[in-house]
Length: 327
Length: 179
Image (cartoon, rainbow over all chains, first blue to last red; front, side):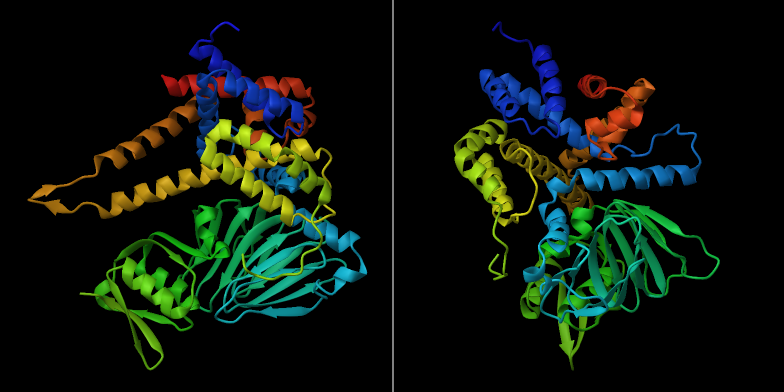
């Protein structure tokens, strides 16, 4: 083959990239390897297309000049997401398999699957994954309790306290609603996180689309697409909707707590759930912003991590915790 | 990963396909990202396959393994990117310590942040330049996660046309970013 110019390599890389999207033809992948090995410029060109693809994640997702009404846009988004959830099942083996087990596997598995109207709880030292009979998966964070009821025409989960990540199996005929802090979170086939720790309420969406009922009667319903979170901190009178990095916001599922530029008070609230007691913040620390990653571990270890990463000390008096300056 | 959880038997078709192709997958992903990272990806493919249950339906186990690895690779790129951004934000926020009266500004990460912002800006403009059908194909595939076949069905055109749209979108974006 004649030596390729960079432009040729770039053009070929674009073509390869597009042809290999969702490709399950083994021969094509083998041919791609031969192309990559033919010239080091090829692998470099391909890597450029790939990083362009990933960088394009940050582009605004909605078409700018869409003349559609908002309602229609939300509907088509929901429809497309539901489609994607179906089409992407293969990439999420646990998801599709959970559903398949419930439907296909019959008696020997039924013991592992939750009956309707069941309450699941976690203590201060563990998280728990529960697979429901409809194939949905719940991951309970520490100190959480949720009651699930699966009925013929609806599925409901009531979060009494704590935080649960819902990976909901899409069933158009049987909506899934989560009730927390007196508000309803309605769900399409999707993955999202609901937090109610008594003083703050939050919903973060990893995939799909959910709608959150207003806090007061007559208020507006909020629709949240993937990558958005709604929250209401203690004492707040309005909801805040913001963009989130789901990888970071839901890091607890992987045993990590990730904070980027968060007020110390919010960090203390989150850490309270892991330390097993509310954490007060010394006024001298007010205004401090925290960026840090902690590994979820037992209390004493978590305390050591906090003190190592931040200029603060964790003070414990009569079972009450507080953050004070380390000096 | 020390939890002892009763697991249904793994998908033998996938596992067999994996074992028969381990070396091929290592060369492929090695060529993509280098030997060490390639090994990590193949290991991750193995973990996913070994934990997949027997009733998962895969039509083309061999091709599926590549597709799975390719998605793992892209997810890692995304994670690296998110991590880089976090590190950058962290440095932007925390490294302004005055040294000898002079502000030590961390110019490199700030440049990175500017470059990333500029890149995004140029991509946004470049995307808007494209014919509407190309933009729509790109959005449906990239952001709504539809496959090329599903985009084709939605837009009432052939799949090969969608592939052409995707190619021209990527070509255009990359040319615009090079400049």
